[in-house]
Length: 326
Image (cartoon, rainbow, N blue to C red):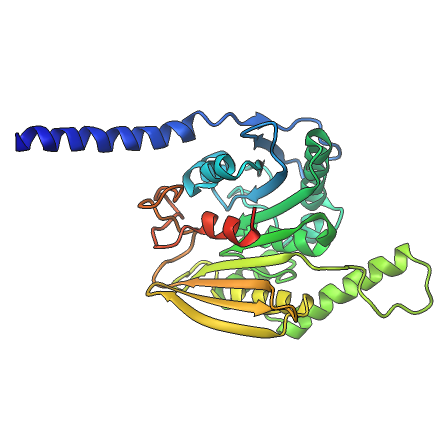
């Protein structure tokens, strides 16, 4: 009798696992073709769980990764189904970068309306027009996270909120040597220098578009909210980058008050609040994990363990979606 009970439990567990993988396997990704100028020579696909989706989430993969596989393994596909949003997945080509990284460290690709940055922008605009959706969010892992920082600076009015996972602030570097140094040791710029760069960039844009003799305010009415996630044992991208990014974005969003709390034994949360006590920036530092995006296979929609997807008590994709409130 005991043997039969154990056998039934085993079969049930296997069926549950198979069911979970089946959802990933049958995700119907569609190619995004003809999205306008593509100077970065990127490709893209998207997953739309239903015609009634009201939100677009662009998710940028890291080096040596396939966008669709990462979306499945991280839990983002299951979350797209649960929360009914379109998942837009740009894909880098190896001929553009030997490791298939987005070229976040190259001005030719990270500057506004240039290279990969323009390609990504045109993907979003094309899908917005096709789906009749206005609300867009962006997230990225590692090199994709660094490119997410650039996209948020270049096109802040395009996004409601963003998420950078094991990434870097923009501008951290403009060549490969500086990029490696920044990855290992954090930005050479101070937080104030990072903030001033962005403000001067926006002021220049405003002066070019609005004829005024004196410009005192930023062109941006409201900076997108941002969540930043890092592992404290990351040896590929120093966690210092995540702290610098969080502080940079808090200052840009005029978030003055910060609170720090320990939610669980394995991660720490810091929040920067606006004058209305709304969270503008959230930083999650996960203890004892290296480079990557944490998953929690024990929870529903928690993702599965894989390369650069270490196990922790917090599923990063779910934490991002919860922070965004979609």
